[in-house]
Image (cartoon, rainbow, N blue to C red; front, top):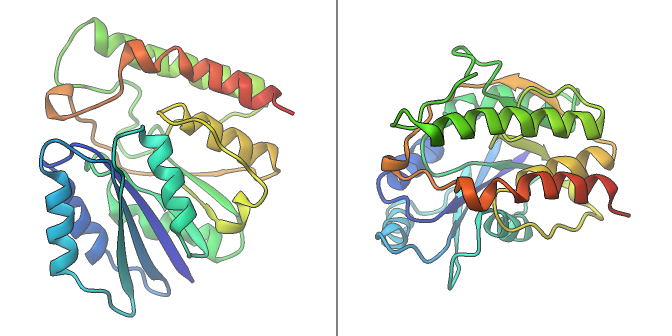
Length: 246
């Protein structure tokens, strides 16, 4: 089976080369890997790092890499959607370029799908070895508290409207068979895409299986991009819009 790993990149010069190297070298017995890097016209040299990485890593039978260069940043959700359009794999997997999640978890995320036990898998940070109830962002203050408790409220709100008991609806690791997207249309461009993608897959009948994954949060001084003032209001709106859309 082929796994399409969709990697949105915007201003990740600190980590993108190391992340791509980890994904490229991650052994996945029984799977062919396809890396789709969507670079959104970064201002910190990330694009050049992506280009250099591709030059140093020519396609092989077991792993190929393709870059999509956007002319302007339009948000993570928009970038991931471009990756979906270009992907040719049997399974889609979303991977951020910031090293918060560990590609070593790929095998256990893919296993339920490969064995036919599930079509949709979520990698839960809150079930992982360190059980991330409270995330650290490099500073101790109002912003960190708001993000942590806001996330918990959003998760509860999502579960209430969708009648689910998921521990981590906003996890980056959303892994599913490519055919699950058939007939679905997405409009969210920013981090609200997490809720739209999850909600529409569930409404289409795909109940996710949650698998514990490793997680290491980074601070805003290390490049974290979620904006508490801009992204917080659109999360609940995306949940409501997705749940009650025709």
